[in-house]
Length: 348
Image 1 (cartoon, helix red, strand yellow):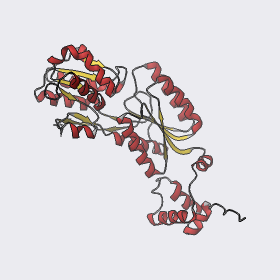
Image 2 (cartoon, one colour):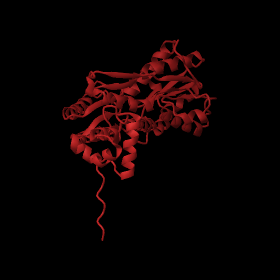
Image 3 (cartoon, helix red, strand yellow):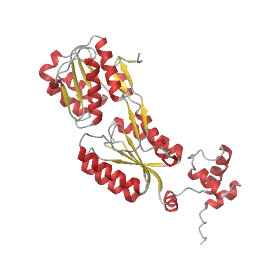
Image 4 (tube, one colour):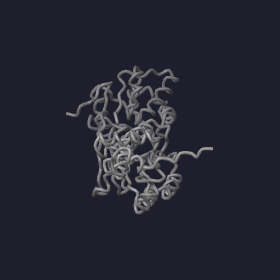
């Protein structure tokens, strides 16, 4: 019985490619420039040699060698959510270019699970931890999250937070409030006068920012929204569906129900149609986030385009730059674009 061939080593790959072992390692494992390390010709030679020899990089070996895996833990509330799914796609595409992997974890929007999950990450030795969960106005909860992130940071993980927060780590955010204000002003300028708003839980920063900005925009046009016409529920299709019941006795008075996510807008529209109310003929329903397929089935739909896919890429870039003296207070601010009746609004 013949002996199995010995697996190829990195030294074998380097020898066949005619380069040094460190150069081969950088080409396959990623140097300071990720997979762009080395010239294209050198990388091509090394990759061809690796293929010819059947050599593949071992993430476990890399973790043992460097003491930390070339992985990024990406924490979201719910992987079924459109926004989370889009951000996951964005960070995975960016990570592939940098030669790192992404480990997605979900909190299921449970604050206790969020803390437990962060504690579990200590033993996984990730290169970075990116938080993309909803931050809140609950001081106790935020302090607990901050403490867990500080431990991870002290252990060598690079921490980045997506969304407005007071956690004290590098942040990627978007101008939710300003975009909501512009959309409200545009709707008022189009002749709408009677509004209700449907948003996420009133403890979530994003929900409050979007509602606050929308109310500011209406106020700038002399329009006030009564407290009873602002409904806070789950940031989901079902949340939007249930919110209509709280507005049901006043639906005949409304021109617009402004949902603060496109998923919520779908739920609102579904329930209105069950009640025999046509949208937008009887009541216009608007959204936030910009799910592309909604524009296909609802021509003229008004929403706010949030650069969700860019969140992940920007967060990863910030995490990988932390070794180069990035200020812990560093913030990357992305812009959202209001879309009024299918047309992007350009600020004056």
